[in-house]
Length: 225
Image 1 (cartoon, rainbow, N blue to C red):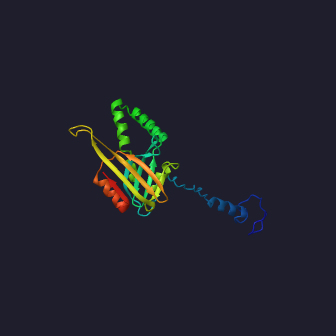
Image 2: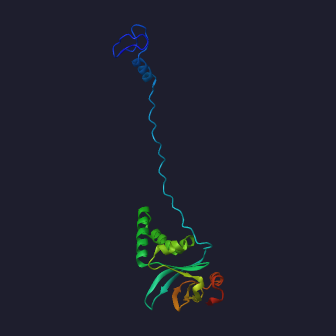
C-alpha cells in the first residue's frame, strides 16, 4: 500500500503515513466504523388481543313483546306439552319446553342450590320460584333467539295469518267462603289454511289479558268468561 499524499510505501494495515502523517484508507474506514453507533433493533409492538364481546341480536324493525302466556299445548286427549306463547306486535312465537329441557334445567338448578349450601326447604322454594318466573325471560328475547332455543319445535306465526283467536277463562271457587279458587281455560289459534293450535292454561279471567289480545287481533278475538 502507498500513501496517497507522498507516495511512500506503507504496510497494508497502516492507518497513517509514517512520512507525512496522512491518513490512509484504513484510518478513514476505522474512523467511520468508530463513529457508527448501531441502533437498537426496535421491537414490534403488538396490540393486546381483543376479548370477544357478546352482542344482542338485531331485532326486527318494530318487534315488541306484548304478552307471554304459560300454557300446555294439546296434541291429543292424553298428550300435552309445556309451552310459552310469546305474543309480539306482529307475530306469535311458540316456545316449547321439552321434557329434556326441563330435566336439564332442573339438574343445573339442583347443582347450583347444592353448591350454595341451601337447605332442602329453601332449595325447593327456590326451584318453584324459578319455574314460576321462567316465562319472564321471553320479554327480553327476540323472535330469532326464541326460535334458536329449540329449533326443532319452536315456531313463528305472523299475526296476519291468524284467522281467529278463541280464549276462554274461568275462576272457580273451591270453598264456600271463597278463600280457595282455581283458574284455567282454553286457547285456540286458527291459522289461515285450516290449522288449529289448541292449548290449555291456568290464567284467570282478567281485563289485562283481554285488552292485550284485543289490541293484537281486534275482531278476530273471541273472548269468553
